[in-house]
Amino acid sequence: MTLDPKDWDAFRASAHAMLDASIDKLTNAREGRVWTPLPDEQRSAIETDLPMNGSTTADVQQDLESFLQYGVGNTHPRFFGWVHGAGAPSGLMAEIAAGAMNVNAGGRDHVAPIVERQVLSWAAEMVGMPKETSGLIVSGTSMATVIALKTARDQRIDTAKTSGAPQGQLVGYTSTQTHSCVAQAFDILGLGKDALRKVSCNDAFEMDANALIDMIAKDKAAGLTPFLIVGTAGAVNMGAIDDLEQFADIAAQNDMWFHVDGAFGATANIGQYAKSRLTGLSRADSLAFDFHKWLQVNYDAGCVLIRNEAAHRASFSDRPEYLRGSERGLAGGAFWAVDYGPELSRGFRALKVWAHLKEHGIKALADVIDRNIEQAQYLEGLVNASNKLEMLAPVPLNICAFRYVFEDNNDALNEEIVVRLQESGIAVPSTTVINGQMAIRVNLTNHRTQNSDLNMLVEAITKIGGELS
Ligand SMILES: *Cc1c(COP(=O)(O)O)cnc(C)c1O
Image (cartoon, rainbow, N blue to C red; front, side, top):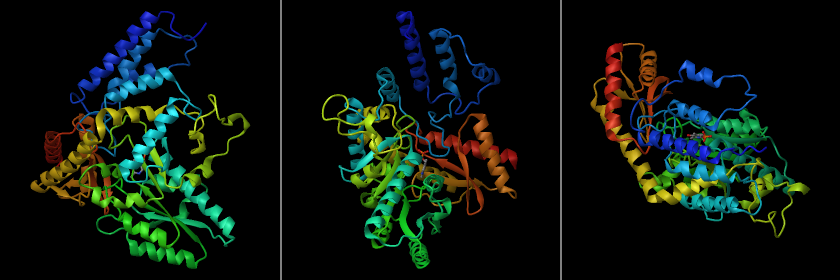
């Protein structure tokens, strides 16, 4: 007995039904509620005993179809929460192909490493790094950050060994706006979260260079070893872009590694509006970014790029006998992903990225990014034109933070507005705190959003705010 269908025709019919239902969902992405919580009965259909006996493909297909409307909501044009990409229908096809192939993309000589290498070379070109830059396709920026920072740490330890210089505790620097995944990476790597110094920001939420220089000097004087500066291209809170050129200079002057967290912001380098502020990406020693955010590839797909291939490989390549490569045969192949990250078995994530870039082309993806930046400014205009709303921060990129002005208790009431918007299904913004004040935060990384969606959002906020005051 195998696990293949007993009746292939019936399987084919179920698979086609699943595909049709999925395409229907995406055809109607603009319709209906943004977010719908899972009803209790659906939930108990999931939370069953361990299934000892199977069911039919058709039954499982029905289950899967019934889940389609209970996602996060980020396929909808009025999903504005956190930083989520909307994905694209073409992602379905690459996932079907990858599912049929079921490759293990950890290494060996087959199509997956070749596709992955090509995607990495395209990625480097998109952000302005040399084409030969090393890298890996990973789950997201969080994992990419761990890989980049391990390479940075190991390289520093290795050079210290050969130079024989005394080595104090390693410390790194980033701004207070930096995503929590950087401190997490310090923790995972055993450096400790405290070894990541948080540098204060200017009014535009960009890392303050003078404060950084002071901190480096103090730590050096205390016998510590500053080894890393993490710049941010598009901070998660407000979209701020650090002065990357300046931090590349400071890193070079102090013999430090320059890493950039560009989760969504780095990809704006393909568009016209942010490009001039992203030239410093070309000087990064390493960069972590996502395909699944502003580039609209289906979850999950992130990328780490590392300028020094030898340092990257040295940090991860430690293949035992049973994984030995060879000149010929299936154990050949030049690019073994296992040499560049902690995972051995891994799926064909690169395929959906390759297909997405190939199908849409960089010009269309750049237009999506530029339109979102224009929409953030459009929304800022709507807020400024309203006598009920006020902006709480500048709009450097694609994120607006504002609030409804109440006579008192602004924070709780603005949080309530956001929850009511989410529960009503009209729109999904999220919240953040800006200079101690609760803000309604609207992030635009969605190719389906139109200006009319922003009009609807502002009308709904004004209406709910009016009811609450
Ligand atoms: C989303 C984000 C991350 C984390 O990326 P994941 O893909 O969710 O792991 C890191 N930094 C910034 C600036 C982000 O926006």
